Length: 392
Image (cartoon, rainbow, N blue to C red; front, side, top):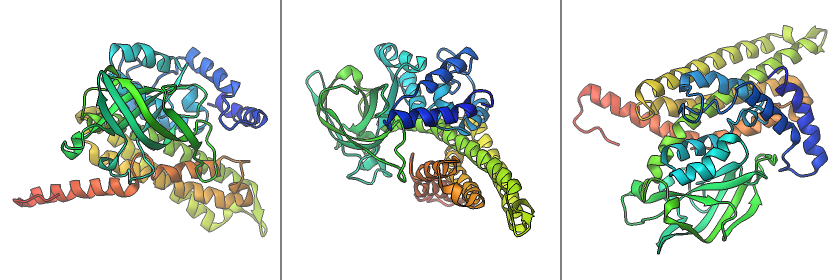
């Protein structure tokens, strides 16, 4: 990070600016990928030894935090960037041999990128049972019709494949109506309508709105089986939320570092900012909040390794709420200490803030995760009391 990634941030900005293309793939990224691979810092996220180093969630979590300190460069440099990480795990667990050869191996090699198409503009996608894109059986395959948006990565020049979630059986039980299919980006009927900015930022990988019009996919490209969409989603999202949470802590640590540096370098009314009581309070509060959040994440990672994602779902939900909110609070203080500079692109604080604010919605909004936590807590307390009816 210190020898290669941080010094490359300015190079990255210059190459992006000179290209004139918000989705340009700058050469510095490939340089960093080669260096990371040379050092063995590659596919660190992948828990299956056949495909990666086989680290546990607890072992990988601190590495995700370090990469989170430079979220535009470090995750992609180490081939640990979302949504590819989740898609690679899905293809590992549920893909056919053909999927693994055609899509998984190039993703693991970092030669292609992928996107995950789940959220829709016409329904409240925070309740995934609302998802309406149709996956209809048609002879020897399926036909997709519908619209998705915020398909992150879909505008990356190297994006070649989508994993799409849609409704395959409206008459089935609510959590058996959905399925997932593998769809090449160049499949006839797949049309990118626009890129969606996030707080005014056009992220390099893009967040695409995509129309699927009579997109035919062979039956072999259905993952796991009809009605398995929710089961695949749960397998995908647990590890992804750990990764997001730890990267959030990395951004918070970088923000606190910048806050302290700025507070020592600026004076007002005859004293350094770092001597002001309120600034010292902000620094102390930030350190306390970061440490507490990190420990909750590490506990969650340990639980996932020890008892599985299902048994750790309360903690997984908790970190998804806690980590972005803690990081946002730290970054807000850092922005304030930087004054006007804090809202510019001269420092990464505003970009970090926009990313983290969006994270409070991505992968399920805070309110959905709080609902999960509350339901689990009520059930636990009712069982302790011996109530006959646990309730929802």
